[in-house]
Length: 148
Image (cartoon, rainbow, N blue to C red):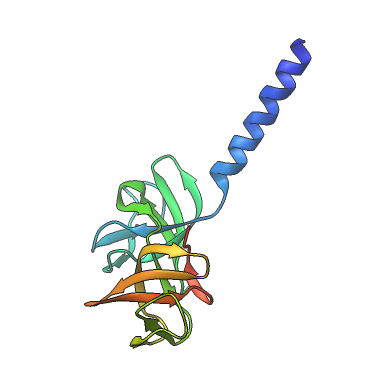
């Protein structure tokens, strides 16, 4: 009985450890976010993001800091207070914003590659998004970010 308990405890530890180290998409919570060379407030600032809701990928974590990488493969450490669950993505090809979730729907706007879109809700292969003063539906293939 003790062996079963110990084995199940070890298995749950490794499963939980693995889930903490997985990569995940996040978004910037503020319009100005410092990216540091290391995972401390004493580490020098490497560069500064100036785009709220920018999607980034968490690749590691240490205490309250997250090691991130962006679309252009820049990396560094950001304090977790500056991050939120993913709520946006960047399109990697030109797309059309539609009034409804259908290619047969009325086009609203032509979107250029690299455009940041803030997610309102998603259905299968489509997301309702907001960008600039526009909102509508866009196909979610070929994007940087997560729709989950």
